Amino acid sequence: MNPTILDVDTGIDDALAIAYAVRSPALEVLGITTCFGNVSAEEASCNTLTVLDYLESDIPVYQGAGEPLFRKYLGEKAVAIHGEDGLGNRADRILKRGIEKQHAVDFMIEQIKRRPGEVTLVCVGTMTNLALALMKAPEIAGLMKRAVIMGGAVTVPGNVTPWAEANIHNDPEAAEWLFRSSAPVTMVGLDVTMQTLLPEEELDRWRRKNTPLASFMADISEFYIQCYKRNYPGIRGCGLHDPLAVGAVIDPTFVTTVPMHVQVDLEGSLSLARTIGDRREQPDRRPNADVCLTVDADRFLAHFLENTV
Ligand code: RIB
Ligand code: CA
Image 1 (cartoon, rainbow, N blue to C red):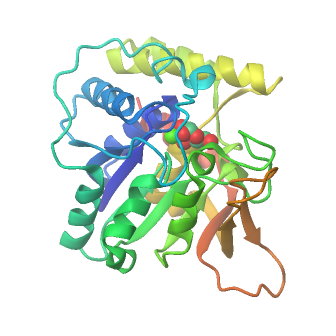
Image 2: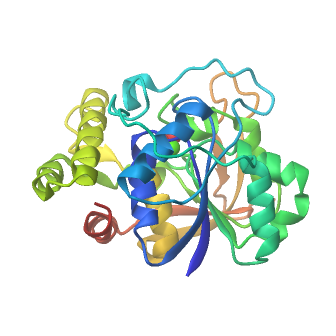
């Protein structure tokens, strides 16, 4: 079993990733930590609890950072992509329980120290919680098994600017803090996640299952696919960004990685939050991340569809 902490900004693909992780026999989800990003940290917590209710799971939820490390959070929720409430306007449940009292950052530190070398962090929102944990307890860089992040784009365009991907753009300094920390990082960026699309026709199959979870996932994914069709004319589905980060832990052979020095542009007026990977033959700095450059999209998608709802 892979003891794992999911760090989310629950939005729609986060919800799919939570279901994929919680239902996987390969992962022991120790807890889910939340942060701002697609929505506020509070909304991310409520949405995460909503998804866990549908999954009939009592996995604990720990709320984390509500704003970036240094920049002002403008509260720009990703309404057009994830809906006003972050779940395609389907966050309509009365929650069965609340969040834990412990702060997300303290939970991360405690669990990593309790099981040295064993805990994998899967960060699919901003890297703010993990950066704060590394600031508070730098030693965890050498104690965690790995940090698998959904974020960045090295060989393809960004999705919030021509260069920047949303999770990095929401808190560039947090991502750079992680890359400089010597923690073992796997970067699951748009280079691979835009190749793993949830096909629209799959939703009918989910609906035919006729379970609350399958109907909920179909409804929120429908909202997400409609957004992708508006933003990427001709696209045949929506990007399974966060689920692929989980998939890379469930079965690392879904992706191939290249060790690379990655740096986040913290000053660029045009390329702020770009993840710059040094792909020269003779780079002048040691690699600080394993960057995913290829994915076995068909095999991953088949596994995700078979094991999520
Ligand atoms: O760029 C995609 C990422 O930004 C995903 O994690 C999505 O949920 C948003 O947080
Ligand atoms: Ca996310």
